[in-house]
Length: 501
Image (tube, rainbow, N blue to C red):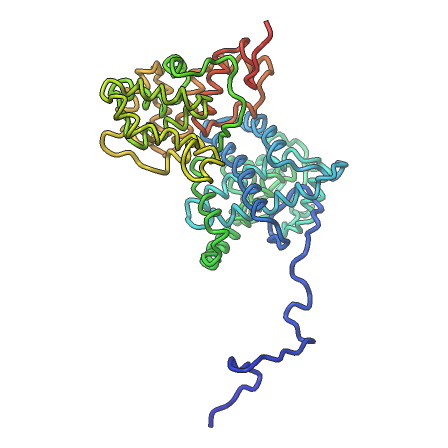
């Protein structure tokens, strides 16, 4: 006899559910109260946000993490890193203290909380992404922890309820000689207290020999509390990333989030940046068809290579023309001047009839002068960012587009850099190392900083440019604009305004 389950709903009949047994009697989605400025991100967010907030909050946090990683690649000291990152934090990811009267305190902490979890989703797919994300998030947490108000910081630590064993007075007396010897700068045992934890939880202190090791335990002085908290943050984050990676397959069904998360994970190699054609152009620069040769001294390597090939061969293939056209459009070159520039550049091998028939329409389409309604309303295509150049349309034979730092051999790249005046051995060695580790945008920034070292030093000493004005370049048009402004100090302001004489 087959046993029947009468509690089971027959799919062929209408289900009559008892309203007293609702599945969601207690709401699961609620706003979180952020009592502390700092966050260990142990509780996932559950309230609703818009897709626009989902993407923009993640992009803003990614900017900060990318700058932290860039500071690490350039071997900046903790003090230099803090000085560079703090203005960017205030701009993209501010966090007001509890004593602040700011009305935006809750939304700031909500943005910090949500953006962390969004990027956690984006960077949990591979071991490499998880390691990099944990490393830069730990660096961000450590920076914030060290700069937090002392009382708020202590209240935050107490709220975490760590299972740290406090070393008793009796044990302190037994190990007094060893504790004093293992704690630099300490003269009296009564002036310090210690915690006892597994040594694996404080690898940084063990490596620098700042703790006593005994029977698998590390005796950590209270003054080294930062290292303990940071190590605990890293351990919990790594565990959370591992759990998140197992849940990722469930997101494949959501066609709204998957493209955004995929885009964010790609941008971790080189953060994406948009350069709006509506941004103010440089009034001090005469940007027309005849001035491009002169202005090319301020071009990044990718655009300088395209310009050199155009002048040498009187021709560029499709993706090279598109990449260069959009860059020139971003400089502020008008459509009429752009058509003149290309017609003059091609005239050695192409007559005007052929040019009008085969190339003119593509230039007009890039500017949004022709094409569908969407293309015209959007004024054509935006200029390519470094991320787009690196990841799309890999160059083939006889093609000049792409990024030289990625698509050139090391020997050809070195030859090109030396031809443009980069002859410092340390810089070339650094570029070679960056390229070998696939840090292409760092290699480009290294060359920029060497080429403009005197001007950068001057604006830093004068205080006229802050860290936000000298952040990592991730767009060719930003490279040009910053180079032009630095080489024309005193003539043009940092916002592109002409200086009064």
